[in-house]
Image 1 (cartoon, rainbow, N blue to C red):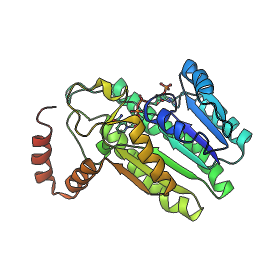
Image 2: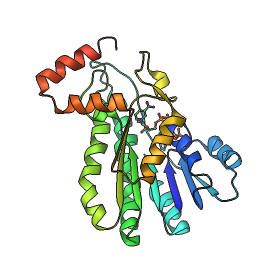
Image 3: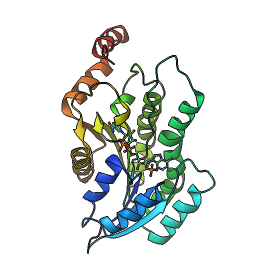
Length: 250
Ligand SMILES: NC(=O)c1ccc[n+]([C@@H]2O[C@H](COP(=O)([O-])OP(=O)(O)OC[C@H]3O[C@@H](n4cnc5c(N)ncnc54)[C@H](OP(=O)(O)O)[C@@H]3O)[C@@H](O)[C@H]2O)c1
């Protein structure tokens, strides 16, 4: 099995990459940080898995085609791609810096589209493959102080729903992953208490198992999943009252 992890250098992507050591023939790791990618080659030594690393900024329009085409040409068959690259900057409702919105959408949404513009046609040609993307529970509904991050994650969820049927017709699986709070450098920016926060290794294990089971949706942890699924079906006036109460301390 050839596995491609985009955003493998830190956090959830890094921990998830570890799970494929010994479980994949080729593990192809992508990120921006060269030193970290070089270290991964040393750290991830396995007799069964060959590690390849590629430096890529998913927002770099001049480079992404070159890098992804060279990955596709080298490995021919890609069995699984997991898009883990993400950007989050906390800011309040009235602090609207366009560059924050641009960077958030560029990495979380358009970066994913950049990658899939090469990978999806390739998957169609090979008539197989599994694409998975990490969105967030923040994509389920609008939340205070998430007016750039939340919409970018909602776009990822909607995109996966949009492509699922056509992908399935071409024997391509789609998985959307919606974690709650996971302890990484991304959430180190949060100053509030994060309910049910979990380690990146545990989150990666849940994702890994869900991908083995070929689930369409991997949403966790359970208490947060139940809460957000419930909030999603509420009439909006009740939703706003509850969200206001739940986010009082944020
Ligand atoms: N942590 C949470 O609580 C949580 C909850 C829900 C969803 N998520 C989502 O889970 C995913 C992983 O987040 P994380 O918490 O593991 O964050 P993280 O530790 O900051 O890791 C983010 C990864 O994205 C890569 N990345 C960032 N910008 C990139 C770019 N322009 N091009 C290529 N790669 C880029 C980073 O690598 P380089 O810096 O080397 O490029 C890194 O490998 C994100 O989509 C995030 O939104 C996280």
